[in-house]
Length: 304
Image 1 (spheres, rainbow, N blue to C red):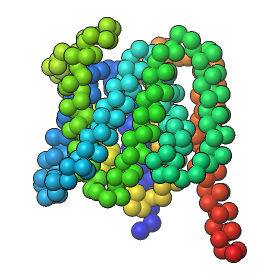
Image 2 (image 1 turned 135 degrees about the vertical axis):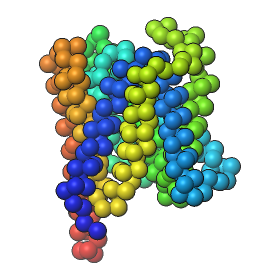
Image 3 (image 1 turned 180 degrees about the vertical axis):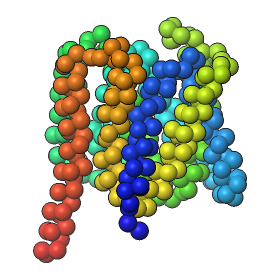
């Protein structure tokens, strides 16, 4: 089935929603640990009801559940650092750090899949590092926020690679349900530790106010469950290349939205935008270069 204009519009709307998550996290009045707990908990409940109505299987072997749980822990850590970055710095800095996800994937994927390291990926990684150096040079006051975002991007790449392997053998809804459940439990256990080591705000299993509930439902149902379900459905008609190229727009959409919503508080130095442009240039060029490489490899095979 051929993808339509409506399919591509849906894809970019989903990427827009993902770019909006840092803004939602900054607007919530509860602690970051509470945000992760409620986001994952609500997502697990919605997915559980959805799977029950569809009569999807919920039983998996213990070894498989353990893999889901480990990946869920990585997801919880990723979201915690992601939202913490947006709060200690701002949304633009957070999303600039998250733009390094493709770079981290190029390093982590060969470890799990045991494929050869691609030298083009290494060179693009060096370009990303140069972009980060430019940002660090001009935005020294935001070093903590950018560092948290970069670590969050590394964790994002890790769970994406883990999920790619799991998705080949198991239902995407079952995977997500148990990962959200594990992430929620991890957040519940982590909250007392958060109270001890993070002094900027306290987490105490806070009950969200009305405004917070609205943001949490938007974050959990729309930005997590809905966006995930539609993206999986779109992949039946849209190539992986087109999907990855669209996802690279997430930091762009997020930074533009942050500028429109927060105005001067999100305005950064010229060096920040130069560094971000260097990172985005590397990110956008990666799928294009890989496509050229694959075509050359295919021609070599046909020529043999």
